[in-house]
Image (cartoon, rainbow, N blue to C red; front, side, top):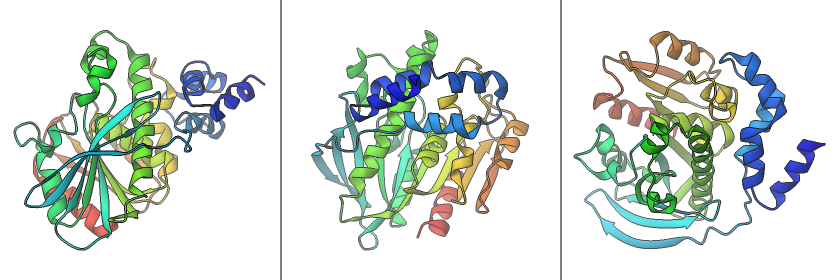
Amino acid sequence: MVMARFFSVFSHGIPLLALYILTYSPVLAQEAIASDNAPVGEEAFRVILQAYEYDRDIPLDILIESSDETPECTREKIVFRGIHDSHVPGYLSIPKTGTPPYPCILILHGAGGSKSKLWNSDTQVTNQLNTQLHISGFATLSLDAQYHGERTPDNDSERWGQLYRRQLFHRMDEAIVQSVVEHRRGLDYLETRKDIDSQQIGMYGYSLGGMMTYFLTGVDQRIKVSVACVAPPKERMAYRREVVKPHNFVRAIGNRPFLIMMGRTDPFYTVEEARQFYERIESEAKEIVWYDSGHLLPMEHIGKAIEWFEEHLK
């Protein structure tokens, strides 16, 4: 009865429903006590999925703010309406190699990153990902997650690291859910573009973005191929909600191709934890690749990711 009343909120918007699921769901509370990092049951997982739904009748109100050229692509700065009255900035880049419609790769940055840092050659190892994807004939879409990049002024200039230091984990959980839902809105926009093949969508996520790769792949079948890098596979903080624990979403990957790339000395997980997690993926097209590194993977992992997309998406 209580669940039915809160689900009725869904027709008017997601905020109250998501807040209820994240905080008060008796089904999730019972599962969490018994789970010990095992996936929740089917009933609880259906509850989790509701947190990632949204009102598809809300217009995107897309705005293309600017366009610039690189040798490999045309890059558009876009802004669209997200959820909770937010506006989501991003870059959509169209390659100059090949012919439209192009397959498109969503690139999800890590904690403390941004869409802009993915283009800055001085900031992180993934800076070459866009360039190499364009050379291979892929379009790319990268958005600023909540509390990152251009979105910090929307949150009184608070950044992700500040939330972590203040142990505001409930806000971090809600921001993850919101960012995943807004990437679903980004998929809605790609479906309106004649130069994008919306049936050929892949995604690459690094660290926090890697965690969201599990979530987005699990809740949206429009993601056909996935690559998750250095994403902690086991939630070590018991007070984090089941709705943002990667192991709960493995069942929804199905038989879609899924590549995991990890560092052997990464402090955020052990080799055994990652192997156990990998074994839970049912897809026949799965692979885990290990590098002799920590949380920062070597540059060659970019080539492996592109090979994965070329093999399974084109």
